[in-house]
Amino acid sequence: MMALRGVWKTYHGPAGPVHALRGIDLTIGQGEFVAIMGPSGSGKSTLMHILGCLDVPSRGEYVFRGRPVHGMSHAELAAVRNREIGFVFQNFHLLPRLSALRNVELPMVYAGVDRRSRRARALALLKEMGLADRADHLPSELSGGQRQRVAIARALANRPSLILADEPTGALDSATGRDVLQLLASLNREGVTLVIITHDEQVGRMAPRMVRLLDGRVVSDERQVQGG
Amino acid sequence: MMGEMVRAAWASLTAHKLRSFLTMLGILIGVGAIMVIVALGVGGQAAVISLIESQRLQRTIQIIPTELVRPGLPQPGQVLAFVPDDFATVRQFRGVARVYYTLYGEANVAAGRHSVNVTVEAGPSFLPDIAHFVVTEGRMYTDVDVAAHRPVTLISQPLAVTLFGTPHATGRVIRLGGHPLEVIGVTASTQANLLTGLFGANAVYLPGTTCRDLFPWWSITEMDVEVQPGVDKQDLARRIVLALNIAHHDPDGFADSTGLLAGLEHTVGAVTTVLTLVVGAIAGIALVVGGVGVMNIMLVSVAERTQEIGIRMALGATRRHILQQFLLESVIVTTIGGGLGVLCGAAGVIGVRAVTHFPAAVPWWAAAGSVVFSAAVGFLSGLYPARQAARLHPIDAIRNE
Image 1 (cartoon, chains in turn brown, yellow):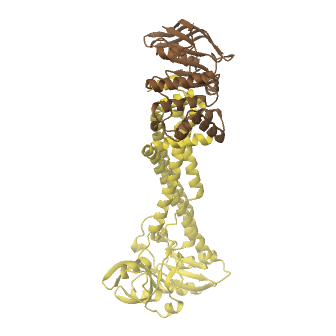
Image 2 (cartoon, one colour):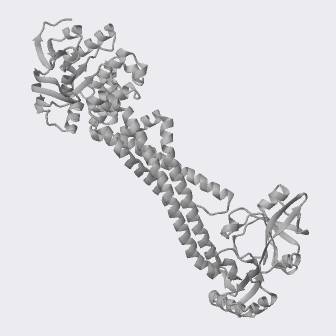
């Protein structure tokens, strides 16, 4: 489903070029659950940005569902993010002035879904997340776990093929974090490809496949026996 | 889509109410000023034109000393006055029905303990230079009152209030220059004369004959000639003016004020047009300054909402979506500002009309044009900040915390 071949990402800082990724080769199949791990500075955030079509490789190829992402226009990248990818961020990244319901509606607004259908879909998603009674609450009126579940509902709004979670438990206590991971794993079992970026070994161990990064290179890519 | 974007724009504007209002204020003041200026200009032209029209319609010729309408202040000693022979001369012209004089002056009016100086206008039972003479109470003096030199008078509403504390003064007695006069009516006159009509003046109206008895030393500076039906007014006026000028040995002594006004129409029109343009340009500059304020605030808003922009982009917003969102915000701000400006301008115009008799009016095209122009200012000043927002890179934007 996603294939990176020889992907480099180079930033031009004041102290000369910085190579965040140095030749990444990675293929992720439809329906997989992959944890991408590495210490800070390993390039895992940069990799997530490229996987999520938020950025394009400086060098190399990235093919997403048969379409080459390198060389896409801004509008095409936006369309891929909108229809194919659901993001879950460490700090939730909900829009603070919009209710939970309208946050969930947002991807559908940009997809051009009419108001009635997107309202119905957003309500249904919030209900699935057990937040039916929180639809009109602002993010500031919700707990961390609730906020992350709103973010997951938002990620699912346009029925994406990929969910990209960047440290989804980083801002949560361990019990709530476990719930959120269970929720993501159950979505994976329903067929969505799931990629989690984390530096937390416990989180990584939940995934059937773990990719380790160091200094912009893949240092290990192992499939493991399903853990807890 | 559009509905959602308008809602989003509105939400972010109401999130910073004071800031949005202050941003609007610049536009509001600019548009309000334009409204008032246009209203005064249009009103002034309308007043001049209606004055000329009303004189054309009447079967009256008004003859005045030319000195009164020359540029600059009239030199009192040089203003010719009519003499009794003039009236006899004019009465003999064919086509002339009746000839009157109108007297203007200032005198002291007293009633009880109150005493004020007022303008006095005295003449026939019709007042040719007053466009809308409305008697609100009592009656106007009649030809009989004029013929009998009756000591009767009409006073303006403001004067009635000043003297008696009530606009209902019919039946009371005032002393004009020490002579008692019975108030037979109260008037809310709208003097067509632009200068004296500006303020609701303290004014007294009385029969010309009575006034002549009280103030025999006032010189007569206006002759009103009522013309028989079917007579060429202009031609008759020309011949009368010629005869009077010969009698006074002054080739430019008297003039037909109707004809003078027609010439004045162009002058006043040109002056008000230039004034409207000049002050309008100043107001336009105010709008541009307002636009710069809008641009400044939009840039601040873009900088503050970098993360929001990044999140929206991650969720699938294109650069065009972001551009539209910020443009919409600035257009909404300036359009509302412009709309409020129109309302404030209209309120100001209503205020002008309440205090003065100036027929100021906001024409619909000025109101609509101002709102459209405000929207254009919002579009232009929002363009650069919105482009800045749209060009943000989604990851840089998200990272901004």
